[in-house]
Length: 64
Image 1: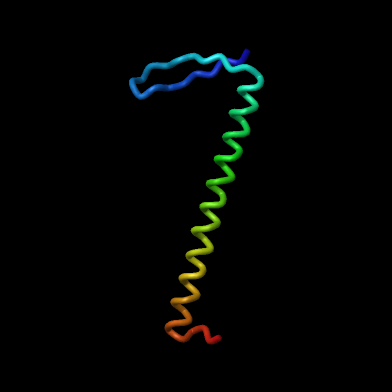
Image 2: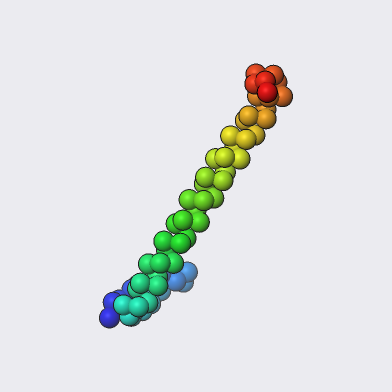
């Protein structure tokens, strides 16, 4: 068994014992969460690029 300490808002700590299967599931969940954040960052970046292109096109720096 693996032990995991969890901090609660009331500044109390709980000890949870996770099985190997639970650890693998938690690892997969964290991996999915990181991938979602990465997609969100890329989406914001591309949206910013699109807006910058439209702005430059509107002030006639870029011509199609």
